[in-house]
Amino acid sequence: MQPQQPYTGVFLLLRYLLTYKWRFTLMSVCIIASIVFQIINPIFAQNFINSAVSGTNGNMLYGDASYFLLFAGIAYVLSLAAAYFSQDIGWRASNVLREELLLHCLTRDQSWLNGKTPGEFIERIDGDLSVLADFFGEFIVRIIGYSLMAIGITIVVTCFNGLAGLIFFSCLAGSVLLIRLTNTAVVHAGVHERQADAELFGFMEEALRGREDIKFNGGAKYALYKYFLSAKKLFVNGRRSNFMKTITWAVTYISYYSTTAIILLVSYFLYRHNYISLGAAFVFYQYISILQNPIEQLTQQTQKMQSAQSSAKRIAELFAVSAKIIGGANSLSEQKSDITFNHVTFFYDEEKTPALQDITLHIPAGKTVGVIGRTGSGKTTFSRLLARIYDPQTGSIYIGEKDIRSIELSALRAHIAVAPQDVQLFHATVRENITFFDPTISDDTILALIQTMRLESWLNRLPNGLDTMLESHGEGLSAGESQFLAFIRILLQHPKIIILDEPSSRLDPITESLMTTCIQQLCAEKTGIIIAHRLKTIQQADYILALEDGKIIEYDTRENLENNPQSYYSGLIKANSTGVLF
Image (cartoon, rainbow, N blue to C red; front, side, top):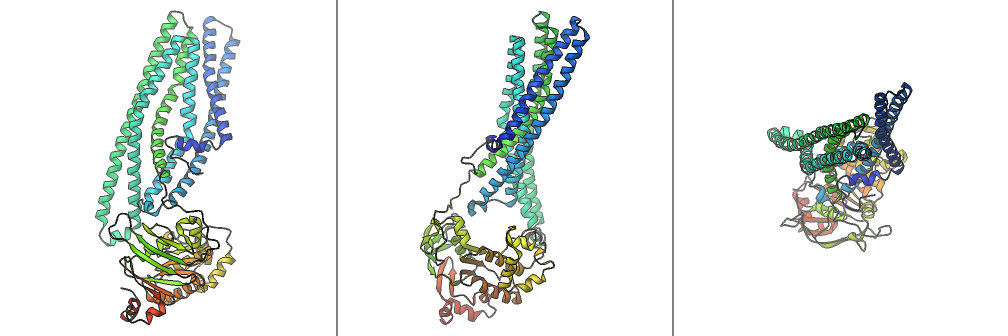
């Protein structure tokens, strides 16, 4: 259930709140009933005062006092119930919104994701939504409830005396208008404050992750200076935002005390001229006193609403980001896994030099291609285009006879498995990292795949087998062990096309030999693309693709290129006995 339009302001979460209709109904009943009891209760105080002044017997006084206490107790219990339902609905709705927002962001284009730091995403998705959840936990009870109370009290006061009701309404309307006038400026300042907060968290996340490089390469002073600039920006924007909130608070209090003074003067005038009784004059004061707490709460909630509106606006901006890479309607269930690049050219952003230029080739189904070339030659870009992380500016890519742009993205991603050079591991068990937390995959299935890959010795070296707990980012595992884990993930996916991005670039010779055996098992009967900096990694490849400056310099079977002394691949074999491309 993704928003069909970029909702803004409080309507962003209200859309989700209304999905919990029965809870919303119970909460509304509790709010309205509580307001009714609070409005009626001062009337018993009026009767008590008028009866006491007129010398009525004590039984009636005791009755009015008892009803006053009873109604006050009922109103309090109903207020608690309304607060409970409000908090419950607010957090349920915000959790659903949090899940959908995260899914929305993860399915956006890679070019957009690259422009955001992980820390910024955390602050904007979790931080902004936490602000909304806190706000909506009290918004309906306090702002809506207190607004209804103010309307109800105004109606009751008008029933007592039309002039008093008119003055009461005018004072409240003036207070609301003054608060509203300051709201826009506060929201604008709040947006800048939260953006600065997100930038600071983003920088801190990057600095903490790269703390070793910063320390070893003398970058501590720069990191501290950059932190100072980010913190200063947050301080300046936060000070401006808090100053605007203080203005709103001051306006609210001035309005309240001005209203109290006016109502007291009006009540005195009406009582002196016998338009109202002493009890009614007390009721007017009692009603304005009842509104004191709501006005104070409205001030606080208005400030929270301003922060919530800022957060809602930023969330709406994320939802408004559309994906340019959109899948088609075709599936790949019966499709052959041969690959064709037809005059493909691709630029990153607005680069003048293409990352790939006029790439045309055909990879037969079930064959493995080793992709070689210097750093920056376009090897990784080649694989990213095939997986539709990016789309080429010109040309087409086909799997079988279908243009990959006409294929459903989920079907395409299920058809293609990628093992990156830096394997993403989580703070979880080996089992959970292999299955991506899918409890339906049995240990027998995992162990069978490990046996197929001939990785029993790797599993036996782990202290607790599949129950071995891994640290964040795979700390505690070697680069080779992380790659083995990624290979098992691929087999669980049952893909038809496999892309391995420099799987042996950081391995020792012994682990590399085991890795080569695993790659043979992994690519058996599948179309494989192996990006390599080591010739040994692709010594069993069926074809060799050599790239330089985004262009194909040669593409042929490995045997033909080995036997051709004029080929680029043959020259590398002769010139580099270590098997490392330079």
